[in-house]
Image (cartoon, rainbow, N blue to C red; front, side, top):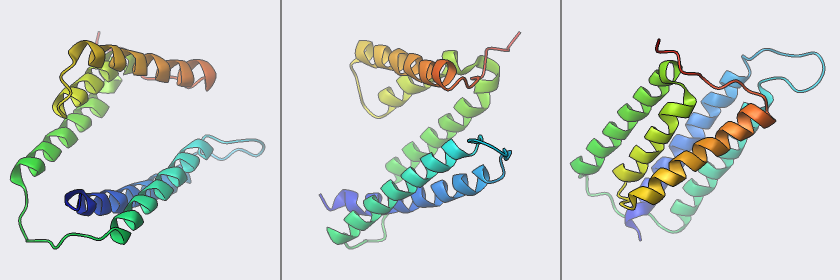
Amino acid sequence: MKETRLADLITGILLMLLSAFWFFQANKMMKVELGIGPGVYPKFAAGGLFFLGFVLAVLSVIKGLPKWEGKIDRKAALRLIIFVAVTFVYVRSMRFLGFNLITPLYLFFGSWFFGYRKYIIAAAASIGITVGIHIVFRMIFQVMLPQFRLF
């Protein structure tokens, strides 16, 4: 399975860079004098993501990387670009369409895009994950999620 080890190394490094960026962005959040401020959870999540990216990168190196032949898989690169563009549209459209409407569509698209073809299960999972995230963040953490504001 040496084909995925280079991808694992790159993914691990990108996760570490992204989590470091998030960590430093969380430092810019409002500070509170007493108790836990709004930046604590993002720092905790970024730290966990950094650790997991580090483990992924180290394990890919330990298991041995394949010799790079200098070829780029154009189909895979195009798929990556498309999914990044869809993710960008998802994030930007959330302020207008709201979290509860756009997230199941995004999750369903992601499962379809990466080859999952059991549509009823994918739809149920997309809705279930959205409901679960809504319950955790809105009801437990009491964090306001973006609402539908098109009209």
